[in-house]
Length: 171
Image (cartoon, rainbow, N blue to C red):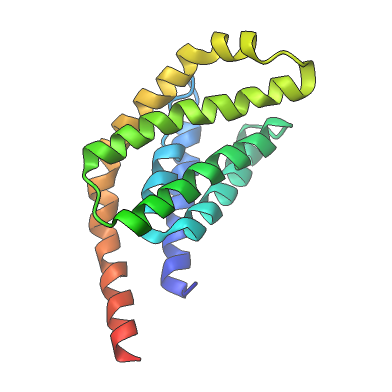
C-alpha cells in the first residue's frame, strides 16, 4: 500500500469511528458498514479488510470491548472482502445495486453477530428472531448511508484512481 492509500484508509477509519460514536443513540444505525462497503468497491478487498479491523478496534475503544468485538471484526471483514471482490470483478456497479448489497449486508451482519449468543448460551434462533427489527434498522441505515456517502466518497477517490493509473503507466 502506498502512502496515499493509507491516508485514505485513515480518513475513512476516522469518519467511521466518529460516525459510529455520533449515531450511538440510534440502535444499529451507523455508517460503518456502508463505509466498509464503499471502501471495498473503490479500494479493493484488502483495504476494506484493513478498514474493518481499524474501525472495529478504534470504535470499540470508545464504546466498549467485549466478546462481540471478535464477531464484529469477522462480520465487517467478510462484508468488506465481498464488496471488494464485487468491485474488482464487476467494475462499475450502479448505486441501487450497491444499496441492495448494503441491505443484504445489514442482515448478514446481524446473523453473524447472533452467532455470539449461540457460542455463549447455546440458543441461536430466539436471539436471532428477536434481533430482526434491529437488523432491519441496520439494513435500512446502510442503504441510506450508501446513497448519501457513495457519490461524495467516490468523487474524492477518483483522484486516487487517477494517480494509481498514472503511476502504473509511468513504470
